[in-house]
Image (cartoon, rainbow, N blue to C red; front, top):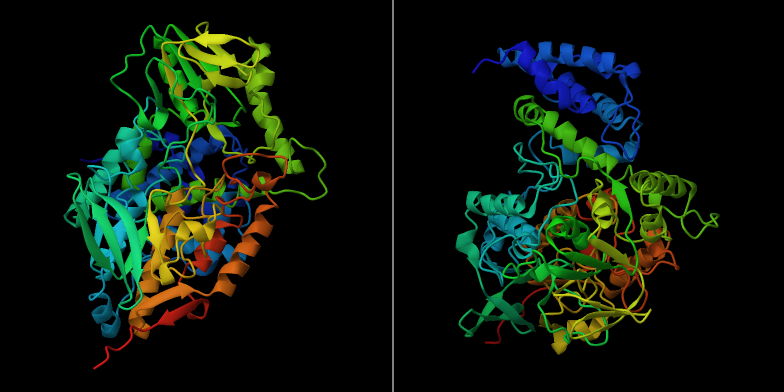
Length: 640
């Protein structure tokens, strides 16, 4: 169907113009689309406002529509592969500031301008292909990371099997079904880099849409034939004599089976085991009580008195959803979260944007680049600690500026309820704990006549409700825990015995660590995705980390094939030095501040969750394994 220039111009009204102009450079071959007076000037908390006058934006859209009409009419792309200098100019323009030279190869790889990336398996050597075909990899988990691992192993020709406790794929997007559940990272970035979706219905999709995305991925790559559903991995034991893992699997029928694998990849994440608070009387409540991650849809909340304990990310989403229907909602808050203003958090993606993503070559890549940079490396300086900064509610001048902007947003929303302002404004720095995205619905819910925010300490759960430190018993009909997950208890559901019968959890002693978040001395060929110190606080999508980790893991299998080794594990000195650097670096960020307590820190006060460097550092560190970091071992020849 022909599209008129007027139709194109209308579709471009919601397009991100800097990304569009970068794409037009390649469409037209004309570098003048990157005019210096068109360079965007962004507000860090705005929705991509370029700072350009509306008449200038209208003129750009008009010129762009003309060029796009010519392309759709048959004019070929004029610049398929921009040279290095042009790509740098495109990046600087879209970012609105110079991109440091050391980032260019990293960002070019993320852009995938040539439809090939370092994350694609490269197993060209016949010797390696032959070796990996004899391997078998056991993957634990069929969520985002597990499916990704299956895709890459399939592309590399490595036999594998995926085991998942659930009856379907999707992981967290299968399990979390509470009202309002949605992603808090823009979907045009929270998706596999090699599987963009130009038809996302909203900028931040709800759980059912995300589940369908991952179901679609499993179908496209024919992964279900490799998956055992409703199956638990109970134990893993390393067989030193044969250099294989022996895994005990338990099916839905209760029967167990032992399978062997060359390598094991755990892809279960950090946020998969609900955490209940340490409160006296837990379990004493006589009515329905459940965790938000185990939402009971059989419990009708309409017209009931509801208590919600916790004000973290999940509560931030479900409280506004249930508040209009309940008789009374009492929200118990220990510490308020920071809500960063994102007005479009619940908004639909305009049809014009979907059209532009689908029909304008390279626009989707430059739009993803803009999202990536502005919410990753470009945002990091705002949560970096300045050693000379003395305030306790911020860690630097930039952090204080960000705090002031967020606080002003709160003040504006609460102009009619100033009594709530102090209660909902955190006294810790932004970035010290997980921030949530705020489009106004949270504070609007707290302002409702049937909602009460209680900041007195919860001291006991009673048969009738919740007792707070002021002696007041809040009687309710339903109790909901929005208290997060056992993030620091990595792999707590799984018993793992490595070399010499060494127990992984005893080795950790409650303080989980890993080299690059993935490998462990004494546990050969065991790889963890989203392992210790690979969480992100403000800088981007966890899918990026998983893609880097899977590239590295596949690279380790390739290394085994190249060297003829049967087993590999990191050297103790390498592991120790890496973790020393991680701990030292984490102290330099808002989340590592000594006066901040959060789930990022374990029982020892150590930040066991977060990656304390830039994304570029993880990208570089995971390009390929360094053989010098590992002990490589051959399988002993059988005695005649």
